[in-house]
Image (cartoon, rainbow, N blue to C red; front, side, top):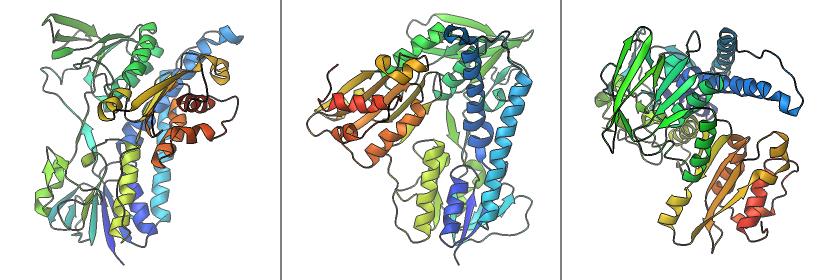
Amino acid sequence: MKKVLVIGGGPGGYVAAVRAAELGAEVMLVEKRELGGTCLNRGCIPTKVLLHTAELYQEAKDGAAIGLKADNVAVDWAKVQAHKAEVVSGLNQGVAYLMRTNGIRVLQGEAWFTGKKEVRVSGCDELLKPDAVIIASGSEPSKPPISGIDSPGVMNSDGILSLEKLPASLAIVGGGVIGMEFAMLFSTLGVKVTVIEAMPEILPNFDTELVGMLKRVFKKQSVDIMTSCQVASFSSQNGMVTVRGSEKQSGKAFSIQAEKVLVCVGRRPLTAPLKLENAGVACERGRIVVNERMQTSAADIYAIGDCASKIMLAHVASKEGRIAAENIMGIPAVMKYNAVPSCLYTSPEVSSVGLTEVQAKEQHKDAVAVKYSLAGNGKSRIVGDRSGVIKIVFDQKTGEVFGIHMLCPYATELIMEAVTAMTNEVPVDGIAEAIHAHPTVAEAMGDAALMASNQLKI
């Protein structure tokens, strides 16, 4: 029986461990903190619990418009945090159950290589000598070299999830997915939010037109968004943090005060503690180098997820974990990144798969885009959001779909139709042929595809 060691129990690691066990391996998993990794314990799951609470809070406050009266709607932050902890704990126990039912031995501790396929674990006297290793050590929040970054009141995405009370004001340094989700969360709950982004635009990986629409939503919520601005320093005094910096183009200085500051300028691979040089595993700028089979430069050592992947998303890590496990167990498999969904859990939600309109037109001469407004969509009107849009980017000659982008209710769920279509190379007329249930927001996908295939004129 092949012995497989998995280092890291996040969404990549535990999925890889289960898949290897299903295929007949004797599996051991090492995790230095909680099973489930950053995503379950300090990232995706707790953040979405809080965002869901904020969305319900806003709906309750707006209920009078549709005949629902809810007086004195308020947020009990302590109970919100307790609910978050309950959800996380339940899912954490679920991962532990998966380990037990699949016969996977779990070691608590930090792992490092002492040689090729030789691993030590803190708190364990045993020298582990597996036949194959899957590294899934994850990532950590990037810490930019800004003066005063360790000042009281300045925190990263891990710390802000554990706030004991809501601040009156919050400055967010970083306008990516993490920053804008927290901007939506706290502004909805009544916190004055300012976002400071060094790039010319927030959310640079999403369709620019949809980002523009979302910015208008943030403006209605009184969120100040400052782009092309470089932060130079933080300083704390009398319970407030002062953020100083300058505008990149004009050089004009700015100074902002907030009760708390969130720094979320990305994440970096967490590989240094592994002592990969002892195993002959090559890295570039801290990221483990892998091929399409998730193999590293060292024989029988694989790497997946944030420590190795070019796309740092939990669902990508899970798929890479399955790919690695299958290759180890003799099933040839390669990782493909052409149809990876990206989701933004704001309100409205934003989701995307494939190339943006700008990218597609740069790469394909016959690329065009159609945009379908959800203003006339029945379900969108029912739920009170008529500002949505679905955009399909495709080849006007062949119908090949290059990308699909959505800003609408349930966008993070609806994107899976687009992912399935692109994964299976379904052209736009193939999507149009599918019968979409009515009334649903999803039928707008069918209407957008009908427009793209010249079967619907609006």
